[in-house]
Image (cartoon, rainbow, N blue to C red):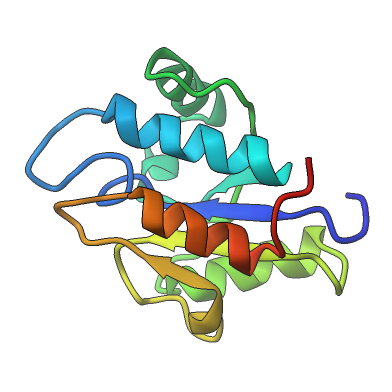
Length: 143
């Protein structure tokens, strides 16, 4: 991976799928798409969806809901580990020391990366204001 390539660690339930719904919300997916387009970020799935679906299957659903990008990869599944531990394992294996990243999640189980978390409300999901916060954490617009 190129040094400093920005990464979005993506949870799906509570971010792109409100907890009171069962499917991807096209508007929220389009917000993610805009974030990725503006920053040039790569998306790494950290969602529990990766436990039952392939990267390709998740990508197909996102594309059907309006995502124009591609999913870069998924964090490892580590039994008994926190989401933060799984993100740390991915970073250790794939990222350069100066890699910029943000975590989109409705949970705060991301220690030691709490400062990189853009936490959504589980019923509201991703919003334009949260996208702006993510852009700021990634260092602004690259493209």
